[in-house]
Image (cartoon, rainbow, N blue to C red; front, side, top):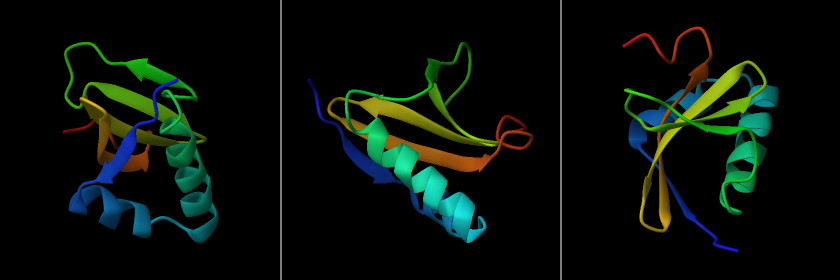
Length: 84
């Protein structure tokens, strides 16, 4: 069972820290589970970068896989993360 290393970009870390505390806790717990063989509600996105998304309630975690590392690029409300 692969174990991935997690890396947050500085942008994603700022977005995470801007969330309300309860939401931060939810997102952080989902990110921790993600390291265990991509556990959770993960979906590969078509024609979109970053290539993957994970649901955390009303929030989305958008990330890429780079070898044995998960690079989290965007953390935010589901209404906003795809508008770029």
